[in-house]
Image (cartoon, rainbow, N blue to C red):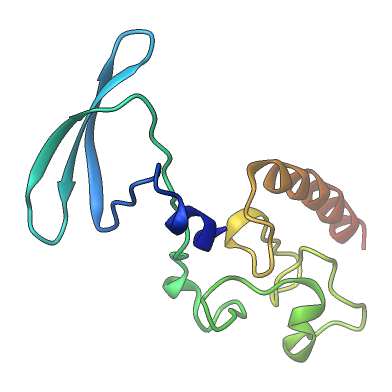
Amino acid sequence: MISRIEACEQITLRPCTTIEALDGDEHLRHVRWRNTKTGETENHDIRHVFLMTGANPNTAWLAGCLALDDKQFIKTGADVREKWTLRRAPYLLETSHPGVFAVGDIRSGSVKRVASAVGEGSMAVQMVHKVLSE
């Protein structure tokens, strides 16, 4: 998908950019952004914006507490067996700390889509009930 986006002439990528203002009425009309490296601010007449966020997880604070993969996403399920301490196998969304679950984009191997995260959240509720009944 990244290659397709980069190859599309109708898409302009703005890495290292922070959107500071979105303006319009019933539709987006103008965008102001700032380049975080140069500090330069620009205003443009733009009708559509696609934001890519969350590609780098903010999990450094979990190191030593939960098992993380090489990209710092939280390992779950079969990926935590080497650090697993219980006799039963970890549930699909369970982290290396029994009874703690991770869902959505923060989870290693997740699909990185909202619909999947919502589904994983509802699955985790059922798994929490299982843990509580043990």
